Image (cartoon, rainbow, N blue to C red):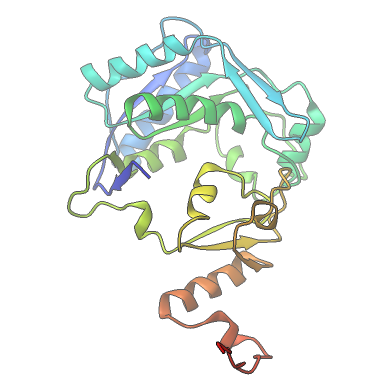
Length: 278
């Protein structure tokens, strides 16, 4: 890769709010930001509000994956630039007003731990745009009206019921997010230093996996993490170790780090064969 990672002790996080967020909902997010400062010791800059509504739209592809668009990306970038230049922000947390999910069955499936996050695709568009433009860590939290109580909520979705916003984990993560660098310096991390990656077995079509697929990096594909993508290592000609669970993947990582061949831990080990050369 052309970019490396520089670990940091902490970042100054700038908060970027969509003009479309209603006053009461905006206040909720500002109070969450203050709470993060008071309880987690985070360093936040003054916040900015975009000069126009971002007009986020969410979509679902034929494959079932979520994606989305930003109606006013220039407004997003102007606000981010203001945080970077004037407030000296080192990472940016974006809160955009998202449309309320229209497909209640999709949202219900996600909340029950069985479906696709209908907002994640559009969120990725927002954060990727800022990262690509300014080479600065960025993450997004959607602004939504509080959801109704669901007695069958999945434990994996329950953390999102803790409050009125999705902002706390974004701020906490960005406060320690590594910075992007384009030249090697002491302590930086580069792609050729990555020994192994763990991915869902059916979601191997991303740029990172495709790039690592042509390197000695060990790719571990987890079968139990089902996705809509259905892009397996075999379809792409990528060599990968197939495992059933993340617990099994952890065992592979431990063996890899210790220099132990995972095949030596299996019940049946094939005998050596002669390699003939004449």
